[in-house]
Image (cartoon, rainbow, N blue to C red; front, top):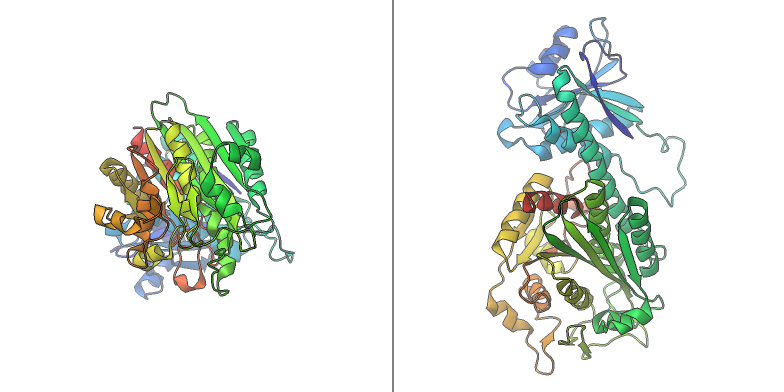
Length: 505
């Protein structure tokens, strides 16, 4: 889909669909909406008075033009919600709702005002970036493996932002460009996370990371089984023992213009998690194709860092394997030696993500970054704690915590800090190894984070437990309109981009 900006008057432009907006608590119609209302002979005002136009966030109402004062065939009014709660996330949701409605109406192209750049008080570039994100992510579909009907093949081809002030066009154009690149990187992560395990094997995931790097012009090195053995990655090798598909270890590198800081981003890449010998229940096990969402986010972030030319040196790292039960699988009671030299007592083979991350984090530390951020669908306990609204944030650094929280609010991918007091670390002490991989049911997300903390030494580090935010289920309830039910979200890509912008400012 193409996003463009054009100078002109909304009442004079010919289009199958014109999108305007409305705050929920607006006393009267204003701006572009008032202009459209006047051209429609006061129709929108009458619908507002009758209670049909409420302005609730993401709510849409379509009216058909019967006169000559407006050249648009239809006008779609999208709600912006309460003015006091308005921000970039509201722009994304409003734009997403409009894009989906346009597709439902089978409109190939439409014209929209720039939500938030008027009464909303947002800078035109910011508003345009958010509009592009919401529009493109809303129209994303994972259709690679389906036979589509003619009706399902229909896609919206173009949306044009209409702007009267020529001086604002460059900022809007740049915002649309940035938002498009950010959405495309998020969709790369969605594709990798959503793909079924028989397609997205560790080798395929690594190959796709290499293809993204080659396409966008940054470095990528892929390590196979023999090289992983040479790297002494005992955790990755142990988890892989039960699988017929060999593991991969991937390192991507991007050098941004004027970069003064080095960031290591580490992802969990379990392409399918059966639980191993500690087998999961059959119900919902198919969702475990999403257990590679951390690695997918790493690939998407590296794409975004390069295409947006973020001023950072970024190192994207992930370990990829399946976790399967077999006669050769690692067992409860095994003791594994990681790349760091620390030994890990395995009490539950379904706590495998932290075992492979031990090696990946050790490798990240060896790159001497200024900060490390890892992303992992690590624990069901985090879902119990935070639901599907926010990712868990665990860190040894207050500045990282503050910046990631701010980035979460800006990106809409919210995170919430969890405690890391030493008493929680005591729960994973082992009698026969340095640490054990589970500490019991209590505080399961925190003890998992403490396990990872053993492998980051004194580097500033943040762990994002995305188990509750990496994919959606029908049980989620009301989803933002740029997400699909039963689908990967691509969480982490946009969060990390906004984090880097603040971190390097």
